[in-house]
Image (cartoon, rainbow, N blue to C red; front, side, top):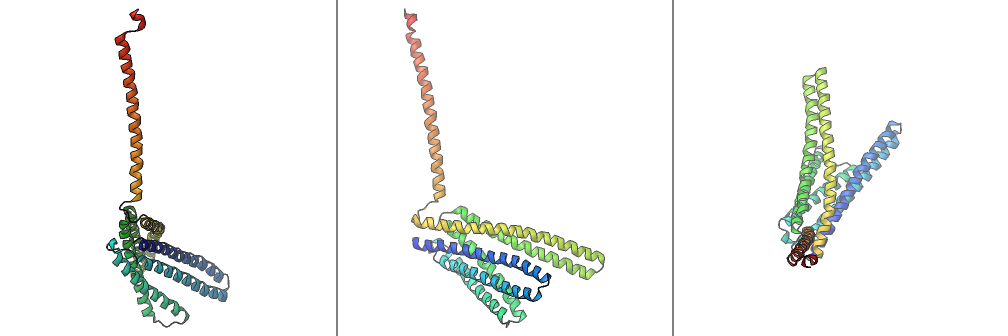
Length: 296
């Protein structure tokens, strides 16, 4: 069991590395796109087109490497013990969906060099890949929750669920923003006139605000997810090293510290009371015997 959990620990770490690579690819794509766009605006048309193609290939390649590394990590997570309950079937389905999504991504990458996919097929494949990625991510978070409970880390299980709800919230906000923008544009096109145009602009502004909120929530989700992966890697490794002891080491350490503090307080209080009682008894004995000058 310990070797299996060590493999799961390594799997969580690889998923984390893959996530960082994909995020890095997105950042490079955004920054590089701005640079290429500025170059195209400055008159370097042909050079900008070549740079744009190279940037697209670099971003796609780095994203693909990140996806592959993350998939290898998920494959390692398949070693989770059967005693973890529903964690095993969840990670199996998640990995299967990730494999199909990777194949679609490879197909899109080949299509960039030599276009062979009809537009309708590419659109359906893209939506299918998005749905698979979303389902695989949800199942992986549920797997993380069950694994956290198995290694006696209920706090991390709660974090996994909070990340899941944040992810769903982000998706809902982006969908709502798109619906608001498209709905306002469609309504303005149907109504016509300057007032309709003003309404379209107002709807676009509202949609942009909702999208910005979704972007902030998504950034928070990404940070919490990355921290969760590292914490789960450490937790599963610690559980494997202690041989699956049936306690949470965090919860085990905290009560002991409290008990030591309480014992120290108890030791201090009785000693103070005993000293007070002894002083009172000495005074009473002196009073009974009387003072030496009183006896004389």
